[in-house]
Length: 134
Image (tube, rainbow, N blue to C red; front, side):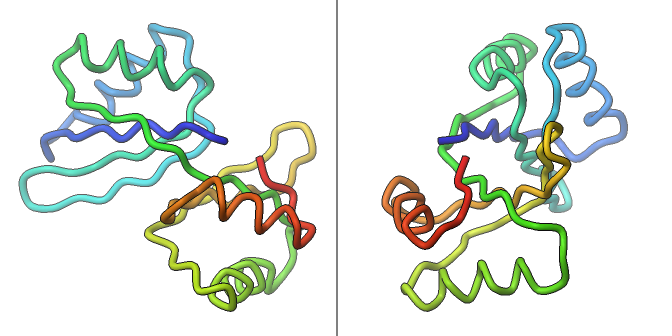
């Protein structure tokens, strides 16, 4: 199971640079991310090389962070693969809360990172259907 770091940060100039600087100082690699913002605050969701260390460093710098289990599914880089994955999830009555893209640095294949209810059950279901779940 992948661990995601969710960072709650003020939506102001330089915030992302500060966050990435903290991760740089700790030697933590960002493997995938998505940012959702509003007028005042945003949520930065990241899969990183060391989620626990990242969360601790960001909290020491004053950011509110949370670790969350997410699912990573490696797919072929071809038209329609995301649609197929989402269709298989919908056919088993699984709703995706959010998703974003990463990639496997060894194989070069895309990894769809997503969150849903009961990630362990969903990961097992996808594995049984032949998906490469990380």
